[in-house]
Image (cartoon, rainbow, N blue to C red; front, side, top):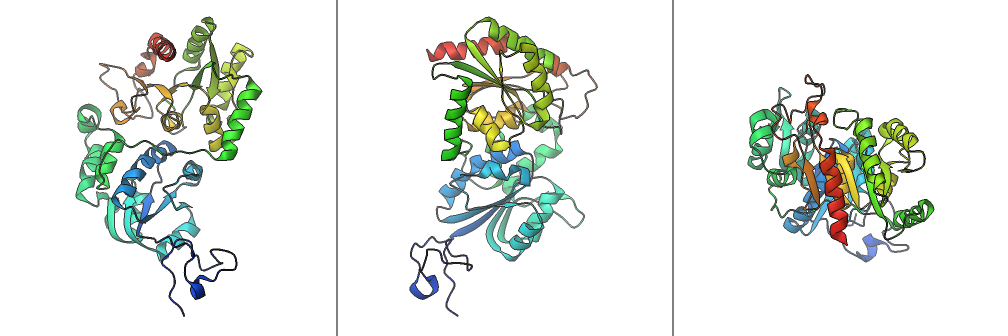
Length: 373
């Protein structure tokens, strides 16, 4: 048997190029594997999108490399058209079966969870970074660079009061990468770009229109990370009173009912985008406004990835960990003793939500558009 080529094009299933036998004639277009790196990221979709900011640093450190990524099925589409990633595996039995037979140079596990930690420990790699589990099922750091990230999960005072580092910064440290404030990586396909232009024509969005997008909700995991419907209505009423803005409602399936309620209140005065057409379509709609008003959610991370001007408000989550890349404003309940907290149920009547400064959101939005002229 001839030697199997060290080449990404070769699968062993079919010719890399029609009528070209690589085993007999050698590689037609050699693409060496180099360092084989697996990223494990089975957390929320926003975390997956934020983790893409590590990809440029990985390629700087390992220019000749092959990057694999395993994530939950609902997050796979986030990584479509990503030029840094060679293959994405959905988290299922088939993928684990395949990955168990592969040999990696480096495994980078993002998640502090038993599930991801167990997977990191089971798979074969010369070096493992991030987090694993021990024989008692406890989550542990796998390298010195992961220790600060690890302590953030154990020390509330460090996480909520002391830490001023963004998630991207301490994740780069976790993976022993140089931190250069790299951006998220998210790209549309040609078909998606055409869809966006067609949709803008369909809803009457012109190049000089001032469009504000409202990402109205959040995942069901932390339902208290969203404003009330009444707060959204007050804001939209104020924006419409200026007679200059177009308003788009954005969100996913979990936001359908509240978006319909808001849209019904305004009777055709706002654009209620579809919420059930999938992640990539939702990203197409979110690409249209210049300003996105949002809580800490996947929609916020998507707005950051799309390089929008983001006005993000925070209550229970850690605002210091979010980097808007100098394109936006973070609003948070200054002086509120219980924020952030990451609680799923609030014992204080959601005071952090009541404290959202709606007038400031209006002022910051107008200041952005006026500054563009």
